Length: 413
Image 1 (cartoon, helix red, strand yellow):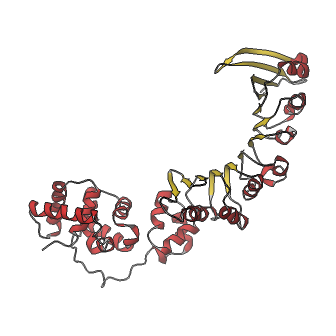
Image 2 (tube, helix red, strand yellow; image 1 turned 180 degrees about the horizontal axis):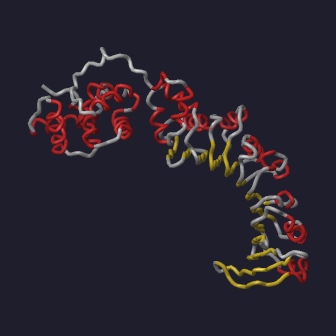
Image 3 (cartoon, rainbow, N blue to C red; image 1 turned 60 degrees about the horizontal axis):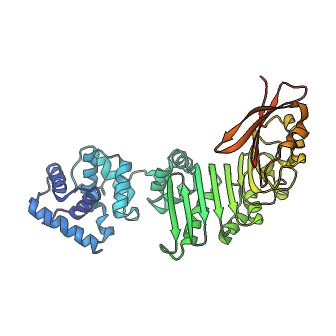
């Protein structure tokens, strides 16, 4: 007679890359502890390859194979291998499907076998009902879940619908998020976990991908270090979600590359002011953007669209980068008169679409301007100027390449 749970154990051993011989050796150890009858290597080998063949032809019912009575041998195998309960549940879920495994039963049998209680026919029904995790107050749920890393939160989320709801209401253990929405696919990366959604995999891939993204972003407890959003074209499902969002999204750094200025304003308006420190923009109307509260508290801004307005908007920032059609005397006058007044400036870059004319610098900065060095960087001619600020021991360093001006503030101690 076939020992109960043997098909599950064989599939699980195959998941662990065990050969028929190694799987039989593993089975004999289990038989020795549990006193279940062993079978010969030849009979086991026949059974081993028969199970794999049935799995290949999808004849196996994985819901039955994940029944706790069928998983006891697999759990004991993990205990003997020294796996943690988290690793055991993760591997069993990957093999048989988390939706098919009752975590409370798994938890009971793992710890029972871990403590050398090898009676696989033990009846739990007469035992007093245990107070499980779900019976604890919500405040304790969130205290525990908020201290889990993302991987374990996702594992817990797959255990049951109740736990999924609890995890979704807790503080997500997510620090980085990237969303790339293209015409024929959507790429999502959350910390080190990534997925690419396309019609090849599911006709409703856009809805599936964006629903996953929106579940994360609608959690008011989310605190990101970095949020990267690229959308071409801007998806209406996503914009409708942002228009109805009841809270601001908290991220320290925002990278935004959208296909229209109106979408840029919408996304920016959904970010939490003061929390947002660094902004990378590839589209948008600066005259509208600077009116937002999100701009007023920024520390660094990197603005990629060609910018024709006054650079005054950027003068209060610590680090900033802009692109202008041409570097003019007016720009350099602002650099000379306004940058020395800044208490925050560390570094700024002005990129141009035309070559920079050195005579502009001599005309604007006159006698206080000195050539610090002349050379080449990456085969591009480069001049470093030093400008001593009048009535001060501070000075500006200006590095001029063919189409780029970099300015740094040097303050005397």
